[in-house]
Image (cartoon, rainbow, N blue to C red):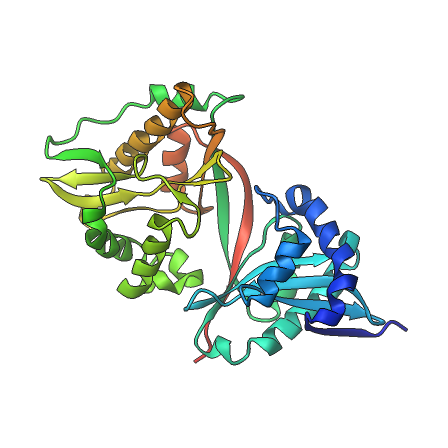
Length: 327
């Protein structure tokens, strides 16, 4: 009978884990919807040794067969990044052992931190398993605006914006409005579904942390020229941020607008401004950008409609799971 055990990765298991990790790397795109190539094994081990990430391995008769990676780098949350089983075999059974050990290892931190887990690709099959541990779910749709191979750009050109009062205008990002951005984004997101799995949105300090990391190239390369600000009577009332990953993929991490200016088509104004800037870069061969993508809730029909009207198409959806703090 196979003997199962799970534990934090240690140096004596590095060699045994390598084949399992390399199997994950070959499946990252096809089975997990990764857009960028994962870390090499050497870089992965280096990140573990530096404490940037933590890894729990599953041993079967002493041999590594699966692993779970997580990080506690966000002050208000524990991010469960990936669960992988060698050759995707016994995925449910192996994942159950890993999740239980993960909850054991993070018991102390979970008294103050939410666990967030984007269940990309094959991990969607684990919904039933982690629901038993008390996880809750928000559906997330991934939207893409492709520069070629689709009619995204044609749809954008046909998008007409309603006539708005002359008090409104859209300008490029300016750091002098950073403090205003904190308050506006906090107001827009503090009661949203995003705040369930990223509690930083619930406070001004947490929102500062998010925007600081976006604008200081922590998450990816910030694109200030393509990020936009909605002004009303020369005061900022909305923000749309853009960043670049892998040199070719633009992501829209946040679009937020003050409540009294919502439901007027103003977010569409900011997005169109930003998207047109990126298209100009592509047409002038300034940057080899292939797509713009973003995520929104699957039940946020207003946002889905807005993105579709701008030329975005749904690519896939996944459950964003989270484990609330138990006070």
